[in-house]
Length: 470
Ligand code: NAD
Picture 1 (cartoon, rainbow, N blue to C red):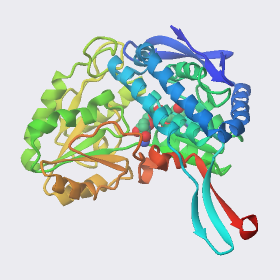
Picture 2 (cartoon, helix red, strand yellow; picture 1 turned 90 degrees about the horizontal axis):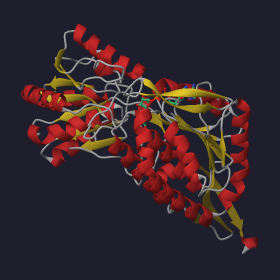
Picture 3 (tube, rainbow, N blue to C red; picture 1 turned 90 degrees about the vertical axis):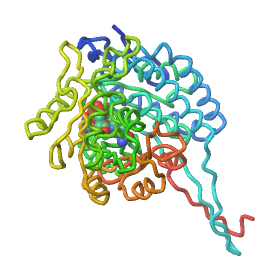
Picture 4 (tube, rainbow, N blue to C red; picture 1 turned 120 degrees about the horizontal axis):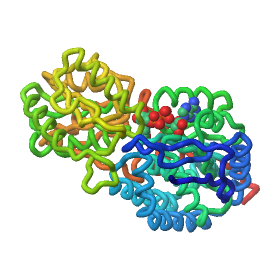
């Protein structure tokens, strides 16, 4: 059993109470995390507030400390990987990979600057525009990619000169808590505080008077509640929310070539990725071939405990999520859909579900219209590409999408028509630190990553210099 501590003002802090963390592969407790009390949250916020001025005023200290934190994170990755797997379920290679790659965000943002600009020079005065750190940030992360999504907040916030109190999901708090201790060797006291707890801790972070910004990744309903609560105090928000990403296969796609990347675009992390492919639109002519090819691939996927060698897909992270996926699959089946592969939970105490491919299904069925966030993929036949684009866009989700074709120009022409933040053509890897990531419509407000993501942790500041000063 892993016992964890919070990091408040650089110190390791336990709680008066703890809560259990479950290994989703076995359904049994594998660790415990402290429940942050309101008084401890006040201490964390106070320490972030005190750290703000010195941190904001010294760019070189920030740069050095962030590079050092990145190095410490890489060194800790092999040891933290198994902990990540035990609380979240991912295969351990993917867990270590997520820790290693997340460190790149610290390096990238450490060296990224937002220089002041002179925007107008009059005979008698000059106007300059610069950016100031937004202040203390409250950050809240989900359970599906706890480390990467924490780093998408920590790295730009710290680079901008802001300080932070971060709360991971209570389903997967342990790796993030452990990182708090790793980082405390590199960061000044109070710059990054990590607290844990069951609700209402998230609500307490959002309504606390200290933070000036909320950086949130999670579901659309919670994101809306966060936006409402933040509005009470006119706090800034970045909301990275759910998606229902469509993959549009064009009629010239090479099915043999696309089946593997298309499968993993939907099933990596057992489908628990905000920008996973969640529905596939394929021309009627290719429908049967693609359905069979995806079903074959799903049946051959190696599902198991992420600590076992060669496992491709782990369990769902929570039993709620497994039940949700099962419910959507049952609903589709009851409505006449064909289950081309999988379709059932896997017997045992872990939260496993068979990789599932669903055919004979249309828009209007829940598994097509809602975010399944799990290993069950509907494949939908279409007549012409205008219809496919219309159906892909006929939703309030707008996170990402993909187009699959042998002709790049045709693929691009479809890509620009998708009402989303990011479109991948013939595949798509992990978002990069340099490019903005965010959704349109209900998939989010604001972006993370790149200079645009850094700007989200700043306020604009105009200085006007009169002739008398020259
Ligand atoms: P969730 O909304 O249930 O929880 C997210 C976080 O919010 C957790 O830390 C939770 O404890 C906290 N929380 C819960 N209620 C709160 C409240 N009232 N106020 C403040 N905080 C509160 O989401 P989840 O189930 O953990 O994550 C899955 C969802 O996240 C999916 O919809 C997925 O698409 C989305 N997601 C989006 C992105 C993105 O970048 N757009 C990335 C990953 C996941």
